[in-house]
Structures are given as structure tokens and as C-alpha cells.
Amino acid sequence: MSALSITNPRASASGASAPLIDARGLHTYYGESHVLHGVDLRLMPGETLSLMGRNGMGKTTTLKSILGFVPPRQGEVSIKGKPTARRRPWQLIRQGIGYVPEGRGIFPGISVREHLIMAARPNERGESPWTLERVLDTFPRLGQRINHDGSFLSGGEQQMLSIGRALTTNPDMVILDEATEGLAPLIRDEIWKIIREIKASGIASIIVDKNIDNLLEVADKHLLLVKGEVVYSGDSKGLREDPSILDTHLGVA
Image 1: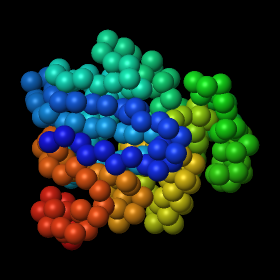
Image 2 (image 1 turned 180 degrees about the vertical axis):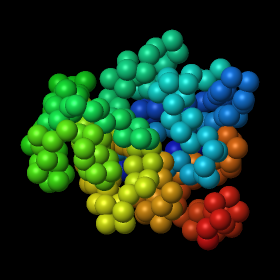
Image 3 (image 1 turned 90 degrees about the horizontal axis):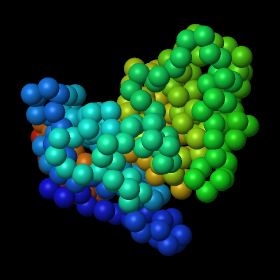
Image 4 (image 1 turned 120 degrees about the vertical axis):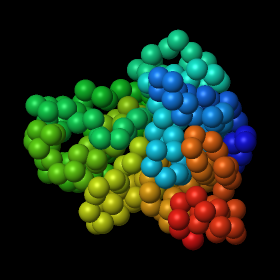
């Protein structure tokens, strides 16, 4: 099933029409295990896309296939119109992707400040709207712990640091893989507030998360994966109008 594209109004206003990410017919394997079966995904400028599905259905594998960590054996991926084949993940990420991986990726022995400074760079247009000061204003907890070892932060603070580090790269899009997993409810609420701020700033995003209510509110479109296949591609209205889709595949109505 082909991904349905719903263009964000901010992207239309700027005249941008080419997709940031265009993935077609992805078939990805782990050894001989066939994990993705013809997945299509398209992300437009300013758009928020969710990847839904139970555990083990291929959501993280889809992200890793797009970013080159687990290249697909069949299918094509382009980022900003450039094919990703035979290019390394760091080369793809430097095309304007802020990546917040599952597990957060915080390095021991490195302070909060160092995490943020070492990642910082202007975007491809030479602009740096996400300065260190802006990140610390967005995440006051990080400012209070600016000289602390990042590995000693709480889980919620580490997640904020991972998102803040991604923003200091001044991305055109962010990819958030289970950004609220295992966090206390109040911290989850803070993370979702930040995700809404990212959306409001015009940055596109792909979000993997288990909070369906927030995904339905924030995302412009959704891909629902079942055993590596897309069984739904569309907007929140479609899911609300036919609750059997989520009930059947996620156990929620």
C-alpha cells in the first residue's frame, strides 16, 4: 500500500513540495528473517508522521532502513531527492536529520554541556536557530544540570538531552524512536509538550510511540505496521471514523 501524503500548510506556504524522505517498496532482512515487506513512506516538509504498531512489527526497522543502519535488500530511499544507497548513516543524518534513537544514546563521562556543544552545527543553509541558549530555555532541567555527567541524569532528563542534542544540529526533520518509553507520566507530558513545540516550529518529524491519543492529536498522518506490512496509511480522521482499525491491530478503540 502506498503512503498517503498530506502536505503541511507551512510547507505549502513556503513553496516546498519535494519530500524530505521518500522510501518505496522497502524489503529489509535480519539475516534470513524477512522483516519489512514492501513498506512505503513519504515525509513532506513541516509534516508530522507517526509509525504505529505493536512491538516487533517493524517500526524501528523502518527507521533503521531509512537511515542506513540496516539497509533494505529491495526498495529505494531518497533523502531530499538524493538516493541513500551505499551511503553511511552519518552522511544521511547530516542532510538535516535530528535522530533521537531508542535507548537515548547518552555517552558516559561527558557533561550535558559537552553533549550539546559537540553536536551543534548550522543547517545546510548556514542557519542556527537552535542555539545552546534556546535549547536550555526549552529544557530548563538541562540548564540546572549543565555540568553534570549525562549518564548520571534521570531517564527523563537523558531523553530531554537526547532531543536537545538533536535540535542543536538545526534539523529540517527529527526522528523520535520511543521518546517517552519508560518515563513517569509527568515527564511524558513534558516530552509531548516539546514535540508539539517542535511541530509548531515547522520541523518535520517521524514519531514512534505507544501513546495513541497523543499521536492522533499531533501527527498529520500515520502508517500502521503489522508484521512488516503497512495496513493503514492516512490521517487521524480516518482512524477516528473507523475505530475498528486500531482495535484490531493495537487493541485500542
